[in-house]
Amino acid sequence: MSDQEEVRKLADLRQWLEDRIKELEEEISLNKQMMGLVDEQLKRESFVKAAEVPVTPREEPKEEAQEEAVVAEVSETRPLRRQRDNYLIANAYVQGDTVTIVPVSDVVLRATTPPFKSYLVGKVLEGMKQADADAVAKGKLQKGKEFSFDYKEEGGRITKLVLTNYNDKARLNEALNTTLWTFTKMLEKQA
Image (cartoon, rainbow, N blue to C red; front, side, top):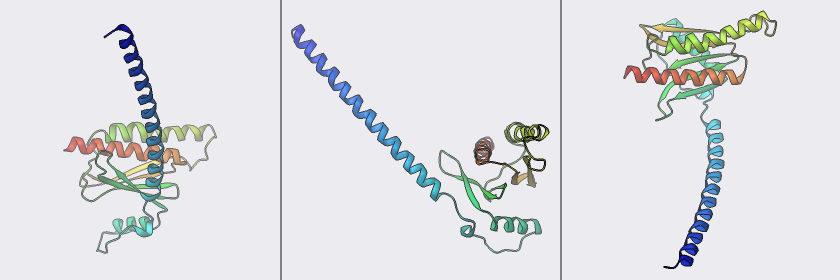
């Protein structure tokens, strides 16, 4: 094969590679657009209205009955699902400026399992609480509107996590995403 033929073949190969890269870049762009549409549709359809939350009638202690009353008044329900397999870990019930996160019945989460106290409570939630306390002290936030949280346990098992005065959607999303990540890590450590 002569040098000219080899140069021509290399030039043809280069052109083919350029065309192929352009095709793949267009395909990636189209796939990203489709993923955006799918994400939007998932956001619209993944939230369950309070009226659609199934409530099974049974005799319950007074505190659980009060919790069901809260669930019946929620404005939004957000399922917290593990990313890798879509496994439902908990449901977040948003009511006004309060969100109550309740692990599903077959999920056992213990407050003693890391990183619940060290990360979620100690850094994230306490950090939000301190930021709001500073904002109140500086007059940037009205007293009584500062973030607070509490969690309940029964037999060492977390039954609910209540976040009050999250104050905006971005903070709510941050709290829910961090809680989901923490709960996922806790399940991994317990397995």
